[in-house]
Image (cartoon, rainbow, N blue to C red):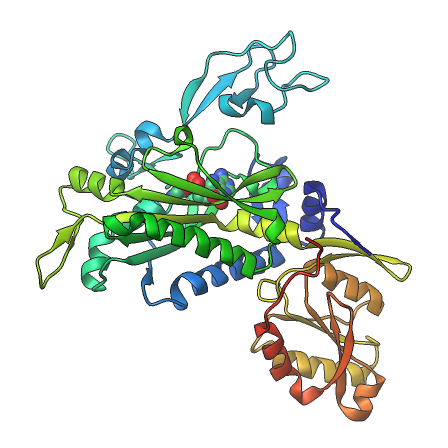
Length: 453
Ligand code: GAP
């Protein structure tokens, strides 16, 4: 029997217990909205990025990769509008001394007990809203007096725009074409996030798709569709995904149309990914500010235009959180409860666990270690011989390992192993020598979550 029993607390607890995510600087009391990623968190995050790069770059002819600097010339952020406009409206409470997002008061708790929304108790004394820039500032240069103020990038996108000419000319690309980038971004978020949903530093996977202006609407719709399919392809349930076009008063300064792909997080429907039609805003701004014309020129016909840009932008950490939430399941099997992460096998941090049934049996251990050594050259696999087999399975279920390979008495007789399927718990026997090929096929198969919609 399976229930959709997931809460953010359960994800936080599993993440800590199994070493996916830890609160950052914990031994110093922690730092709000900052998290560190443990072994399985790193592997899961890497798999999310790999699947994105596969879909956006490797499986296509029209998108190339880029890795630009985190610290860019400070004028980039003036031209992009971030110095002037990348702000949140904040209010302070003179009574409890807490600071809140003025536009999100209904999502915040005031400092009084019993807790209400800010402004709702007679003691609340809120200031007028003031605009607070979200960019982190630092200084480049050895000397305080001669140093230059710079910013940690709040989005990876600008590094792409300022490289438009390099890529278009040197990589000989003609619109429509895209430039994809995965990297860290930084925002001085005041509202404490919900776990890794909103953090001070996070990774983004952004792709800027440069198109002839007349084709912008069509490409915008194409990318909303494509990105929705990607989330479905890697297992998010359709019933927990929706597309929400922004109202005119929500649009960013650069956008003429934006749609959010929203996921039904335990905190409610919230943005998972944004797809924006940025028009020619960014290339035009940088052309004016830098004095370098960023346009596409056809060497043959002389035709020239400033491309419009369609941008799908997704947070790696937020995507990982959605996959974990969607995968989380609890069920009773026989008399026993188990917690299981039903992750898409291609996202799972560990693809198979190799388990000698009796950890102290030298012959089983030898066979198991030999299989492990063979498989680990090709896949992320784990060997575990400590404790009862049931406990070892439960540990692998909690980190989402799709297959358990058990070496038992029969293996010693006929060189076959038992494969246990994480989701169905079905078991089958395979010849040892065929395991590597079997696992390769299994990981390539289409997969849909067995969780009810
Ligand atoms: N270049 C456009 C851009 O940055 P955004 O909607 O501000 O747009 C894109 O960010 C995505 O980055 C979001 O949909 C979300 O997945 C992720 N993201 C944004 N801020 C974040 C934060 N503080 N913590 C974690 N992820 C964040």
